[in-house]
Length: 68
Image (tube, rainbow, N blue to C red; front, side, top):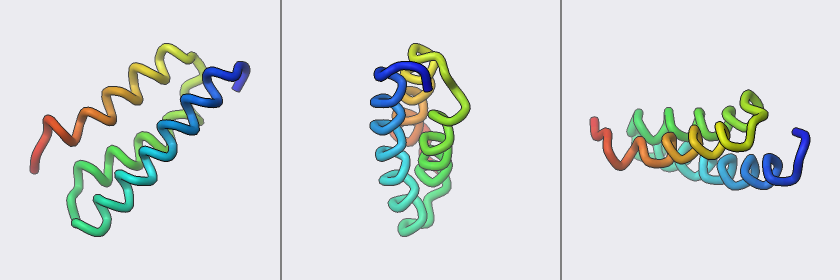
């Protein structure tokens, strides 16, 4: 992680990922569980800040639009 923005966005999306993961596990809902895993792993895989924000925003909005 090269800059401060990536670090802060990583903390934001990582904490949201933890929340989605815990919710999905307790409710046995696969979409929030998957979104939580994606949000937790995404900051480690993406170093570009703009791609991190775009991917994180898409993963946060995924459970609101996809219902299984």
